[in-house]
Image 1 (cartoon, rainbow, N blue to C red):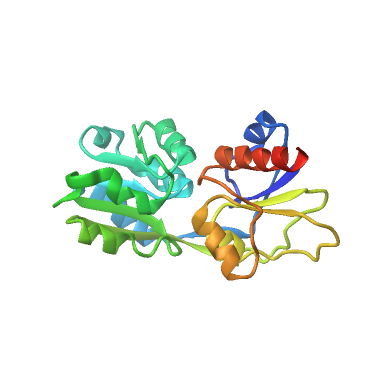
Image 2: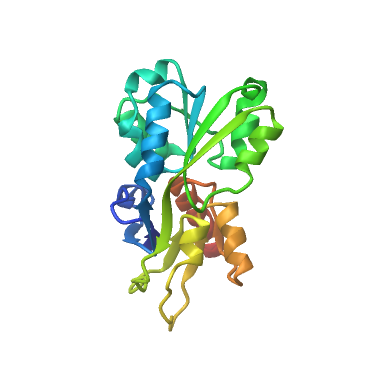
Length: 232
């Protein structure tokens, strides 16, 4: 099956993962990031001055664009935490040894850190659209959140190319909310990468057929399980 996967322009090609499970990927871009250089500079300066106990990267884009500006030696003093496998890979590729949340959701950061978080300064280089309760939850757990709005996510206003696609996989709530969908003259499978994206889709009246675990690979595996059950 040809699967349209929503990503920002320049994102990693997920075709290798899809081919592993007998599918093909087409990257479509309903949204694009716009950098806030002033915020990026402020975050990098503070990080390189060792002002944090941990840095949480909530997305692969933040790791890809902001991570390389951090001194790799900081990873021996500061906990680098990735939200998912692609984010962790991007950090490792630039020399930052990163831990990875087990369930790929920002809301899992607090239980993951446990009692360690108390009194710790947690930096979050994030998008304008992100999990809104994270800073509040860090405070409630006894930590000190320091957020940097390093980029905004805006609509490309380009109609998604779904020609020949049997499914479209939305990788974030913003990707669905800001997507410009074509008029469809046939059935297509709507897929959410995880529960938060699924909630956004249902809020707008679209019930996803498949809900993944927050990762591309886990979502493709969930799709195959659904297809297998339908076949039999």
